[in-house]
Amino acid sequence: MLLQAPKGTQDLLPDQVPLWRHIEESSRAVLERFGYAEIRPPMMEYTGLFQRAVGEVTDIVQKEMYTFGSDAPGKEDTVTLRPELTAPVVRACLENSLFAKKPFQKLYYLGPLFRHENVQKGRLRQFHQVGVEALGSYDPLLDVETIELACALLDGLGLDQYEVRLNSIGCPLCRQEFRATLKAALAPRLSGMCPNCNARFERNVFRVLDCKEEKCRAATAGLPSIQEHLCGECKEHFGKLRGALDGAKLKWALDPRLVRGFDYYTKTVYELTYPTLGAQNAIGGGGRYDGLVEELGGPKTGAVGFAIGLERVLIALTESGKAAEWLSARERGPEIFLCTVTAEDRVRTYALLRELRARGLAADVDFEGRGHKAQMRTANKLGARLVAVLGPDEFTKGSVKLKDMATGTEREVPLAGLADAVRAAPAVPSAPAGA
RNA sequence: GUGGGUGUAGCUCAAUUGGUUAGAGCACCAGACUGUGGCUCUGGGGGUUGCGGGUUCAAGUCCCGUCACUCACCCCA
Image (cartoon, rainbow, N blue to C red; front, side, top):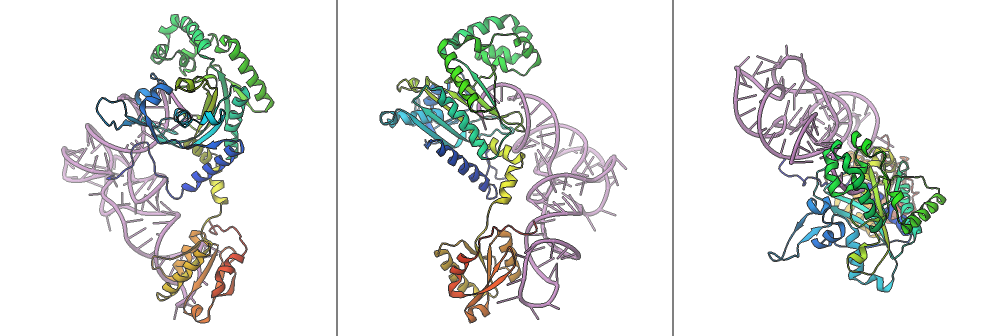
């Protein structure tokens, strides 16, 4: 291969773009129904933003960022292709003083992110997320809203196999206490655990809890849960959240081992998983991050958010058959395709085409110099609703036969009134027949 | 970074113990009383077997190297 797209990137070809637009449009409709407004931060940010927000010791910051473009050697002005969007959104809010006008903001985003990591199923270097950030409230009901919104986004696409896993990882205070307890309990058992967990013990003890190794699971089986170590405030918040969630009749499961990768999460964390996604079975995830806005130099602000991975949505959509279902049901193709008979007809036909388009109709014509029959085949393949054949006879008589491709019936209309006739023709959805 | 799997036509895949001119389905193109799509039938175009080297009378097949894709570990959406 002489030419190839960079590893972990992909071309979205014309036949798959409609599905992406479907995902995007469906998402926007749901998001706006929930009162969220779109924000579009740039594709790159100064590197320091992510270092501060995501955390120096995370994998993302340590080895997955695309960083480049310093103006001068030694200066701290390199930029990084955004590996996540919570930090950029918060930065944009602060920089543009959005809180001054309105202390409570409900925002959503939809677009590509970049992480330099090894690819596998459901994991790319350039990938897409739809996500929300609700900033300016500590209300547990807001946590509930975001969870329900995440579910509604999947529901809106007909995805119904997801599971919601929920946990609270407490505030920095109770978490620190729990970390100490956990380490103390784990230390004597380390020798019997996998090398990974030994590394996690230093890096991020909580991760030890969701190790898949049998011996590690056994070692952590009887360990204390974070649930028992939450401070009063965190416990109350989580209690209210759970109560409200039960009221919503949403199926969810408490998972005391659930932890999230970014430093900024506090209290509520949750994850939506989907079967058939492979090892990367999370289709979305999020949580509360009450400390981040202040950490980035803003006022003390409560906030919750989540992100859903669009490539993973697409996998779920495809493997559940929903994608094929949607594709076959959708309308497609031009309203009218003009077939010519002789080469001389082509210029006059093109003039007619121009007129139809000017009247707001989706119209098309052959550009490959194909025969008449082949033009009909093209019209059929494109999914054209109507076909008009324009040969010497038609231009002489000043009238043309308009063929309905779904029924095969034809009717005679005056050439001058073609646009009106196309408009008036009953709009039956047309798919290529016999497929 | 590490480990497994796979690279043959646009796509999905065949090809015996190494043995003629590397095949099929789909897709594409063209025809089937010369101005009408789908369905059917007939015909046609299309391959540096990822790339490079080696063994052999002979390599898609065996060996070495390399590249790519893919799945998984780590981590995440």
